[in-house]
Image 1 (tube, helix red, strand yellow):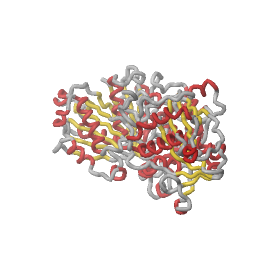
Image 2 (cartoon, rainbow over the protein chains, first blue to last red):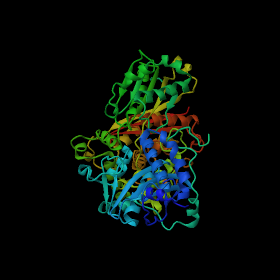
Image 3 (tube, rainbow over the protein chains, first blue to last red):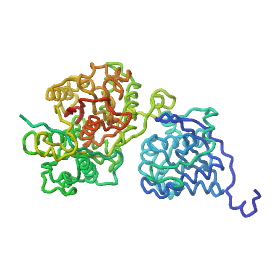
Image 4 (cartoon, rainbow over the protein chains, first blue to last red):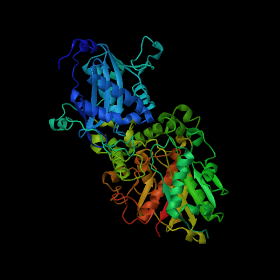
Length: 230
Length: 399
């Protein structure tokens, strides 16, 4: 696509991020979840998956879904810099999505974690994968994190024992609305990664193939009675 | 001679997260379901006594006098109503009180309803509230929680009898297989041994809660309720109910030291043994007569230990029976066909009534396909209050 001069000025500078190597996790149910980095052609399925949750107030799904929709769309339309999206899928069906942003070589900015398939710690595994990308592959020194929901607070701030830097506001100020900022430092990550982060690499080709073309869920436990195309 | 007491109506809600609802409504839901099961809501006027089981509504919900609220919510005034609290055995204690009300001649029809809405608070607050039943100076103030206690007991059992973490996972696999088929269960997901014990991701997917207990060794924090209608089977009122009564054949209860370290051996659950002996004696049967059992497994180690104390297996051998699938639905002695507290969930004050609800369903032959025990005659429920210090065993018979 030819990019005109104005569009060039509007787009963020492109930085080639290290790729996230796909992995596979066996969930407690015995199902295998492939975790991989999203591509541009995945965006319609991602947006279609996120959109219905915009109306779910419980557990702040509405806020997270709205913000994630914005992030993925902005990434697709070149209005956010250095963002990456990881998706977890079971038999190709989207089970969860995480978004994040590489700020510079020292800092990562965790954006959102959206769990679609609940009860199997899918969100916990995807959040860990996101941290793995920041600290192991993008080689940043630390990741800034906020939580919208109490569940997120418990999963990240409490379970990872994140460093509370809210007293350093405004010097330490997460991009998401200036809410209190917590930090995963490399030291904290090294202390917890063995019990928080898992997955097998390389993913066998036949398994990876199941995640190639993402499918939107037809039903959501968060939306009782809702059916896609009903 | 005391009258025979039977159960003619049962009700249950789907366990899970009911924190959007008021506790009294959650309990009333199951009570209404029990009346519908028994023949209709008009039967409310036949009730002589309401007994409600609940552990800690004052702490979880800032709501007290739940029994009074329930009769009013159900338009049952001026029926007498009382609340029974016995920690996580509140439900079974409520059944016992209902039985005693009928046996004493003071009532012919009793509504027993029990429930808890725990998810109104965070998980760690719920753990703290449940821990308040431990001894204040010797245990609670020292920071002990129930998962911490259960972790230590599990470690002791492992060292003494050779139990492994994989054995604990096998209990969870069995319970989740059953719970996945139970429409009332909180967690309706089967889990595999590879995923939670053997596979490369198992250590993270099935993370430690209180080592050696992992997530799948521990019950979830659950909201829910269940209800029963008890009737004097020898009273003319028994004919008002359309369902054939399932008879309460035996009830036994017993206590043990509040402070666990005062026991000679923490691996001996004396109150479970005594309560089950009393229930067997009242029913005129023994362990070999039991067709299936619902055993209090807030932590899977308790399913194993309870199954030994009630005489199903020799001490230190119950996990071998699990390995051999003897406690599966199709096994010699199915244990926790409902999914147990592990998968069905554990709304503390409601659990005892939920267990007996399951006994009735199984004895009526109404359990879902794939988890119906074949031709059961006697079902047993063990409901565990505190750390095994106040236990009620109930035996139902299909006459």
